[in-house]
Length: 300
Ligand SMILES: Cc1cc2nc3c(=O)[nH]c(=O)nc-3n(C[C@H](O)[C@H](O)[C@H](O)COP(=O)(O)OP(=O)(O)OC[C@H]3O[C@@H](n4cnc5c(N)ncnc54)[C@H](O)[C@@H]3O)c2cc1C
Image (cartoon, rainbow, N blue to C red; front, side, top):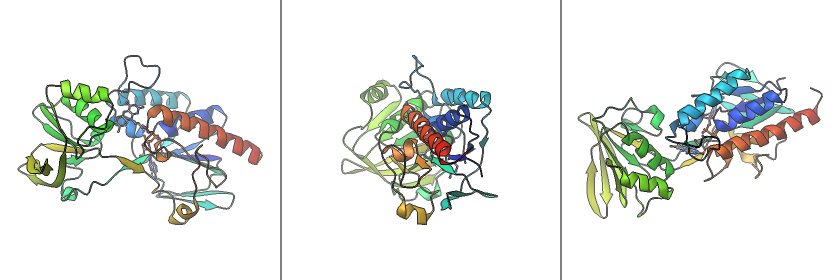
């Protein structure tokens, strides 16, 4: 039986794996997408200590990856399809194997909230995206609409404004809900336009662009950018947990659960407090608790 598995290699999973490796364990780390998770989308991380000038999400992930490499931590590029309890441990199902770790840290992050924009399924993944890392390489003549009022929406707009000709940020509320410094930067930018009280209703593809029909202050308004990005909040990603386990699962404030050996770390359990530093701290603290559990639970 393998000691411990980690689901997700974003900042929380990476930090947990680094702690465990140095504590003498061989964590099984699974990542279904790219190592780094949501952090790969960040334009400029200015609140993670150690980088006085700030650092892009991609650069920070590169440093995290170097650390994994130096410590010989292998991340398996595989989705865990389902997690359940199995005897004294857990049952993890992937596309081609079943594993039974004794302890498990779930760092599966978040999924985007559905804004119920009519017509979106016809353009999602081609013209309309949820993450900036998924857009095609931008060209100077491209135009974008970013939907959302929070930090991520403004971060995306600032990021895009460096490479494309125009970015419109639209959101339903009367005011932006992001850090003031991000809003100030966007308002100072020459090619970012902020449109409060603008609710997108319908989207469709038209002549290589997308047509986004909105209601703006009671009037119909149409945007026709090349691409759109949606950043309207995120929900915990608990999809990997079996329906049966979800019914009885209780996640506590410190990341432990009502099931011995099962922990949650990072954005998946942090509500609105979704930050890299918090995810890293969570990863480390759950790894420490898991190590204690394993060492106390049976002879290694
Ligand atoms: C635009 C933007 C800007 C940001 N800027 C900042 C900033 O300036 N400062 C800051 O501190 N934070 C910032 N953040 C937030 C930061 O990126 C997140 O808080 C952080 O990435 C959370 O880490 P995590 O490991 O908890 O989750 P995530 O980074 O979401 O990682 C979860 C990982 O789990 C994987 N996964 C999920 N399910 C499975 C499965 N079943 N099997 C295998 N793998 C799975 C996912 O593919 C993903 O890689 C920003 C976020 C965005 C979107």
